[in-house]
Figure 1: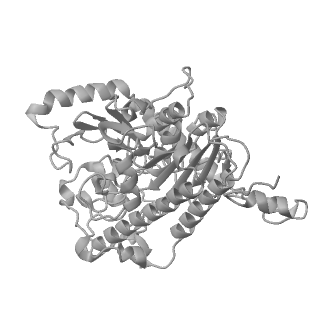
Figure 2: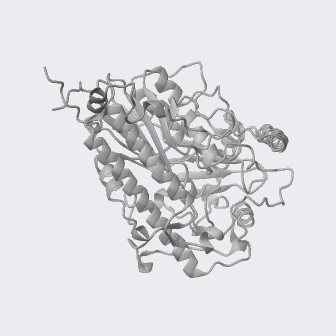
Figure 3: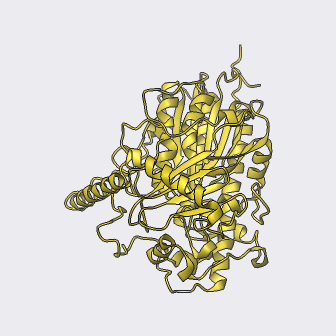
Length: 510
């Protein structure tokens, strides 16, 4: 029998995938992708049909996700932006409420603070913590060697092992061990465990069992317009990842998408492991599960790959919340964003936000309770492919993409989910376009943001060059293991150790 009191406060398990495009997933529409565990979770939870990232790139999106503040407010300009240590995150809030806070996996924190409120990180990060990937607006025509290229597509196919598999296997193993350790500890302190995997992010390769879950005939091919017909930012992206005027072999496009589908199924299998661990440890009924991601992947749609634009495939993310006995299963059609997660998690944990601190996100709890809520997303992008800020407003049926360097774009994503009809020149939509433009210009001081980004880029380039000279001191997180407290050690009574390490724990003989 189990000698443990029932948890008094709900635990939170927040699971993240990297670069998982929501429009492709089976709980958002017809899809060949096999996600049995996530689909089951979606069926019993609340699914957000129009959830967006707030910046379609790893680090800026994640900094906004954990802080609830838009990128320009916290300096989250690109994948080498410093995340200030004094910016509160959901981990700070929940830790202050008495939660144990832990991160297993990727969050792409840049700078010397690698915890940002988490009590512990169970793994290192797959990405570097330094400033080496800073964008350079002073040399917009220079393509850095570290930018994405098309090798991920040209080399797509099955594999036995990769860097990313090494990482995600560790991430899931350490997360499961955290859950086992939690259940074997005394007390009823709740946890907030974030498990952040790197799949299905490119390179597009996956072990054969997942590759073989699909056949070439299962793989829908993307719609690819002529490059000359694409908007200026899309054209720059094609040059960023060295695809301009270089047609891709059709078979490699299919291989890349097939491997991506397999990688989505790999994520699902890992979600299944975590769900099974919750069941095995008796934590399932005490744990709120949130599943989301940092951005999507164009996967060849519109001729584009990876992310870095505001189109649906790159900007829409999966978001579902499962809380047994707390919320009825359902769907939310309103536009929300991952910036909304901080106030949501704080409210679910029974806490209150600090009214004197800035916050752009809004709680999703009214949506979860079926009471409605906000239907609005603001987004900011200032990284690869840009020559100035590229902003986005999503409200109601419409998406407005705002730039002072390129023509602004307007789409009706309800009527035209593939965004094939651009409406900025439509006479019927001209009043709406003008209203969006006026709103965007009132909201964002683009010259000021441009100056801030340039200043940040210049500072980071100098610091990065300086720190590469002489003795290297890495900012990468180094998980510490105290071997004296592991397994069998002579300073702990053997019978007591074995009893405490066992679950369910045998009751001591009276």
